[in-house]
Length: 283
Ligand code: GUN
Image 1: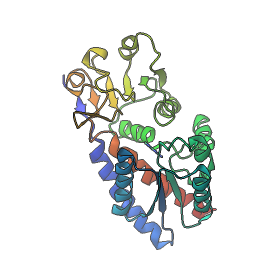
Image 2: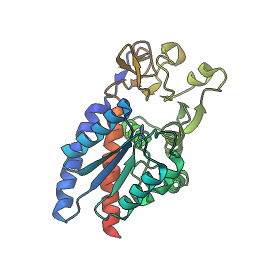
Image 3: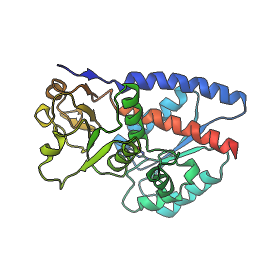
Image 4: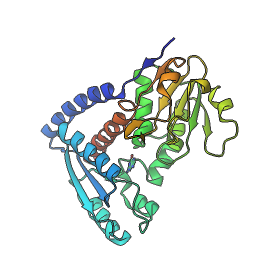
């Protein structure tokens, strides 16, 4: 039986409409959620992601600024800008686009952002809060995946979730979020032996390896929920880590690339920024 396709794009549009209304309500109370995105250098993929974030925030009436810095920016210069944004009461969310040029230590930058403005959820304080099951900013892609699964009414509790990838941005936090939802979680990665033995045992398979075509229909069992986080360019075309055509024949649900997880990442960033504005307003 062919899978039901979960389009994050449609869900993202619905959620953004709800957020647009929420922003209009907040503005009546004098709260104007504002996101500042910082980009260092000229990486075309990063520039295109950042443009998408800006466009999305403008579309829902959220204030946003883009700070574009040259590829030669020093770590001190960047930390100075982050400090200013931390101090600026009109700014609720700060996002520094990763990766950063090699002269800048990413972890130092992540740790310089005020945790209450860390809408990426990358600061160790927020990562620790998530680890210990507390309410906080969750990293946007993992959070988007959780929301997609819930909206599709995929049950998570007691299910075996297999994740391929262990990055700080996706693999590790998505495992943590789903563990918090009472899943049994297996993390696979580049050193995992006999990958297929693991993927075949998944109720929910999350693929975030960055390798086009890594997973095919042969790697899954009938009824698996397949979430493809991969973003690869093959012959100029955007594709995920999963061979959609073969996997779709066996999966119960599957996300496409594009129009799958991607649009949810930006949506959860907007959500986190509204949350930050509401939190700060309560202080
Ligand atoms: N680079 C790729 N994805 C992300 C993200 O979610 N946040 C940031 N800050 N950089 C990224």
